[in-house]
Length: 356
Image 1: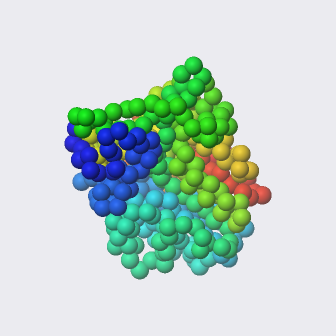
Image 2 (image 1 turned 90 degrees about the vertical axis):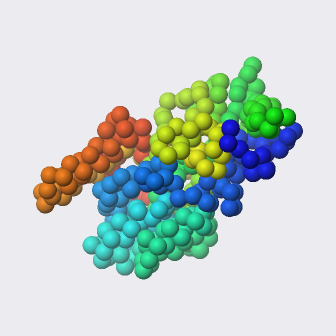
Image 3 (image 1 turned 180 degrees about the horizontal axis):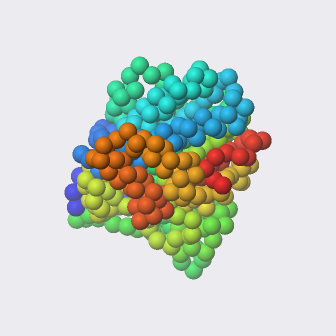
């Protein structure tokens, strides 16, 4: 096991909950995965939809234009990208908006990024753009707001619990005498038990993954939407039917990595429970469009037609590359079905594109 016990505050006889430990592994200043490594692309550990094809980013950009229209073409309109990665999506967004002068004049673009390393990467690719980087949403005070997160929620660590004789026990990590990491279960706090009981989707599961840190983030977003109007579009890999398994996974150089190996050098994520998100949005009085697959959403938004139009001016090699990348986004065996799309919103209008 490649692990330095001085890292991430893991010590002998000290218990750290799974979510707190993974949070340190990913985001601890100067030690965490996202603070000292650029994880994207062929030289990194994984590839996201915006880096696979500009078509993805174009389609989402058009959806944002359409949503701005549905919201009444406000003169002051805010867009926030959550976890902007290497800036690829926002670069296409800015370029696309140049073709729509009215929204381009009205929109304020914000990037919500906690990694200083990635922020510097984004600033290079987005040099000259009218973009503001933020660490909270306090400065956004006027006008409706659309939040967008692609593979944002999966990177927020989850708590893990085992249900035994109808009691919940939380999983912790600790170092043993051999400097190896042990999993230890301890009776869950009454506060966490009460919180979990509020979700029907988690009822009677033997193994529970609970996104406490993620829901804290969502609460801030929901408050802003409730006050200003607008919505949140999330695209991520996840599931609809309840799972009774540990979905935490680690990736290193595009291959599966043992979860507790290469800490700080490999990515750690989990599958997103979309029905739980749906419940949480509705409990907080947001409307929710039906949850659809990435394939369904992108095809409804016209991604195939867009590809066909672009291909007419391409040679054979360029066409092959275009459709190979499109297949990766849409194929049910690749990203098409595993990735889901949810839109939670506050608006009198319901006819947002991509869901019917």
